[in-house]
Image (cartoon, rainbow, N blue to C red; front, side, top):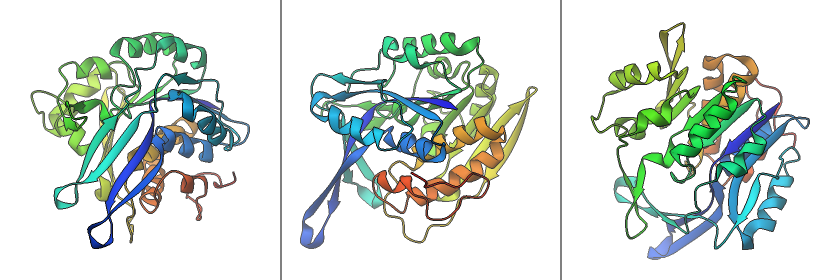
Length: 314
């Protein structure tokens, strides 16, 4: 199997409250690396994951070495960009929330960098920064893979986040959201993204009724500790599945949980064609991610995941 993953890499910088009012800073690679690590770990050594993204010149060699350490990641889609690598800073907010700021945003990925790698079994697009692709580039991708029937999984992620003059991110609605969703096999959002997607502020049932006629086969809404909802469409009929969350005793960091969920769900859907089973597996792996900081722990899943081959072999 060959899976292509498109989206921005990031350097995640977590500003945490330490003892005696001090600040602790934890820094690690992030962005689509969570999706990539999940797919590379779940796939076998004979399969290939091809990420397409740009990285700052100073970080290029380190990133390539990190990707090659998985053993089944093809790095030809990784290219250098001028300036620093995209950075995402997380600060403590009110009532346990987080304030997110972006620095050194990488330019949108050109279609010319993507096109050579689209001969694949699936295309996962993760709008990790919200500026990963232009709508025109997405149109080119759709046209390129349409005749082969290649499924596209699209995670809205930060597409619904604007950026202010201080690099702070804020929620925004999208007037052209239907164009982003058109002819996409599966769409993923969290509850907040879904609630604020349209200028009309559609409730979930109305949004679903608006979304499925756009040739969307599956719509996933992630709900954190309350699990996820899967809406799948077959023969113009919609079926709803509520997927329970896996309880986690000690949550360390939820960064990347949605990325892990999306990659696991898409991969298992391609492999088994069973969307509901894939969603159960995805919630299990997303819960495990919440117990760790960074992506490195994704290489090893200490317990077997029901329904999939043994993982953690690399």
